[in-house]
Length: 102
Image (cartoon, rainbow, N blue to C red):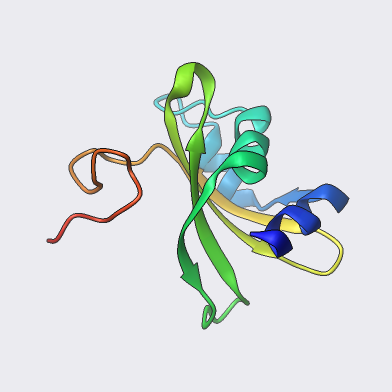
C-alpha cells in the first residue's frame, strides 16, 4: 500500500478502460471516489506476476459509503488506475474483501 499511495501522491493516470468503466450509467464512479479508495482503502488482492506489471486490487468506500474496487499499478512517477467498479454482492463477502467460492 505504501507504493500505491506514494505513486498516487505524484499523479494518477486513468487508463481508457478505467474511464469507460467509471462512466457506465449503472456505476458513475467519480474520480474523487477512486482517490478515496486509493488513500484510505484496503489492499485485498496483490498481483505481483501481472504481465502488465505489478498491480493490486483495493477496496474502499465511495459516495454514501458504497463499496468500490480499484485495480491499480504503482509506477515510479504515477499510479496507473486500470479499472474501477462496484463489486457484485453475489461474488464477494459481506464486506467485499473476500471472493466467494464459485
